[in-house]
Length: 164
Image 1 (cartoon, rainbow, N blue to C red):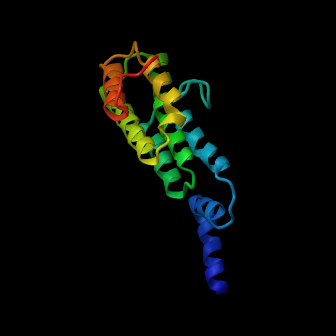
Image 2 (image 1 turned 120 degrees about the vertical axis):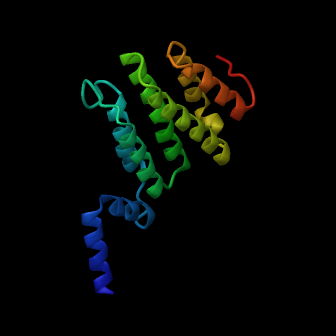
């Protein structure tokens, strides 16, 4: 048994996510601090002035933060929050820097759809509807038919046109 404890200690030192998983799962620690860590990684990739003045907008880094948090998340609200933060932050980036390549918008659209599906599955849409609508409002002037595609996804998943 001491070998197992020692091995777990080594894993926690070598892989911070293992430590976070045990903190949340076995020690009963609130995962808000961990959630905020992963949320900050997402925001740092897109939001000017959050960590650096000119963020790099690395979609893979932000998506990895969501995937990593999902592995240890204990809160359905926390995961939904980070997923929606990805889209909100991408919208901020687009509004700040103008037209971006279509792959960027496709990624944002995909995450918006995943967020909608997740919110519906977990039955927590009402808790996030204001933010979903804010994304739609904030995309009105963005290129690539981005606003229209998000609006379509909202209507398809929520079942009605949004009321602004």
